[in-house]
Length: 390
Image (cartoon, rainbow, N blue to C red; front, side, top):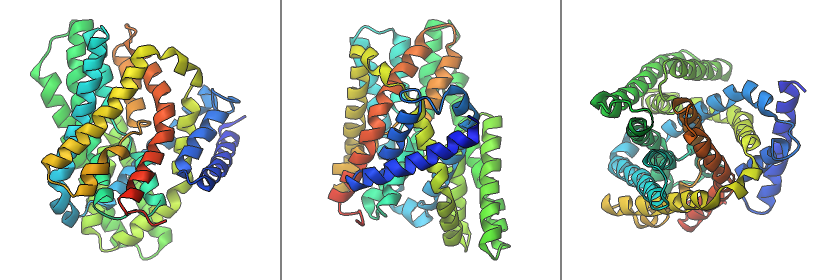
């Protein structure tokens, strides 16, 4: 079958399973992941490795749309009100997961390099599933705004943690020199460049939106800019999530037609984002779960524990509202997307060691679980916080 047939089957099947999940009061994204499991290597293998590779660009585009929509929530008034708490919580939850996972791996007598890389990957939180649940239930309130901000900046913090951890790991595996540039300067430059690119493209997009007077012009301008931005970030190894989020922030704060622009993209994005989750589910191999062993169980357990306790502690330090302190950690379980990208990066950077295969096996196996329970916990959190419009 060609990619068009496979993609058509995937979208139709995914939407059907999403509707079935809704019947059981479970977010649709869980249904998309399950549909991917059935169609992918864990099921009928309709979405096989070759097809998934050909359709990989859909995932990059979907992440760009998701990050752009996150930016729409970060108007200056919101940033002024929640800025401190967002960065404090994101730092605490990322470092919490990194610290607990790294420590648990060392206690299980894993090499320092393995412990550091698994800890760094554990710090990542995928914004896609969380954002989709918040949109599906039209959530509004302090928990929702804080959660959107945290998953948005988590990418930057995770990138910093990974850069430092991988540089130290290479000292032990490849005997490379540990330099200030590798550990500090390079990741900071990457983050600043990603944000600057997104803001610059945002200025261009604001102008294009201003000269548009109908949907047929505004939507293509916005989608075209997102595609161009995603391509540039991939070409120069920048963060597509940070850049797309910065693009959205610029439009949200500068464009007088921002409401229409974001609505048009949201209306357009549904099948793209559904495809992203279905194809992500297709990559997952259920047969890996029994191979996890104590290392996989420790990774899964201490990552969640680090996220929940770290986020709550950060909220306490930032003096956030009570609902944020109580529920913020439960919206940070999902990992597909950024973490999978990091796992692939690990396999490239440590090609002559077994570190890459260890990370990918543990990550993909635990992702099956987090991608199904993550949206459920996020939904329950916003309902208990009274921010879901059911």
